[in-house]
Length: 235
Ligand code: 3SL
Image 1 (cartoon, rainbow, N blue to C red):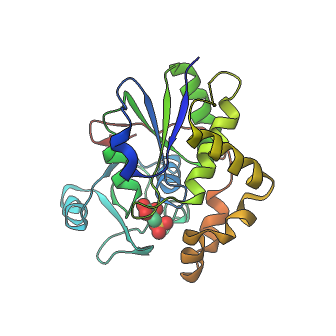
Image 2: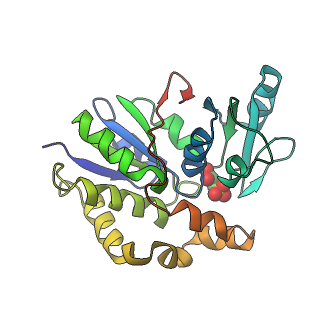
């Protein structure tokens, strides 16, 4: 039976061998949720980059640019890191490619590239991710983007939710990280948005008046799509 393990922070990734495994990279608030919303809104593909300058430079090649630092939209780009940026129609995104850089999410994606497949996971596409990893029949590592190397509640909750849905066909007992994520999920699942009010990143987003982003990002199974990151592109 394949296993599911949880890597609580990109800083812990050197302890995991991703070869032969599927990595599900998650940054519920908000990078991977926004990437899912972008593709659902007709964006052709996204290119995650580390630096703001790299992101801005891709505008010259026809990319829309999306950039966030410390929760705020960076200067001189088209979009921030809100899923509503792709959904509200203010910036037309259909048919466009997007260069994106965020504090933690795009970094986690880049660090997971040695996995056999790198999947972009969010509550918004949870069941689609479940179905995809079931088909793969490989060991899974959920790579939590965290916040600047630190553990965060929302990504761990996603790991627990994924493990709970896979429990019939995956071994969810092989690591204490998965057991802890499952316990956390069962403590929160009745009211995820309410549970997350205590999380540090939700407090940070609330101070930026971004509460509606959190409420949207914790909605499960809104989109039936599985973005894959390969050869530098998410599509
Ligand atoms: O760190 C990230 O990658 C972002 O998702 C953080 S924020 O939600 O845009 O502040």
